[in-house]
Image (tube, rainbow, N blue to C red; front, side, top):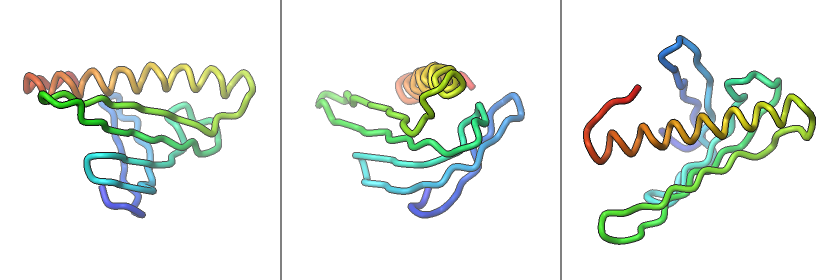
Length: 102
């Protein structure tokens, strides 16, 4: 990923999304905006922050903001929350054990 560029994310169910990389701080932060998988009709903003905890441990925090405060926005945010949890679990399995869960 390169700051200021748009990349395409594709999932195994042939769904894809264009993701605009807005900021990268090496080993610290990846920030992006996108129209979420739920296609709510507007962009949300995602920040993935990384904190070195020592002993080969890293804390990853993922936040997604910009949701409309209505039924569709709340439902979509909950669905994406589950998606970020799944993504981070897959990343952990890959990094620690070389397992591709996708």
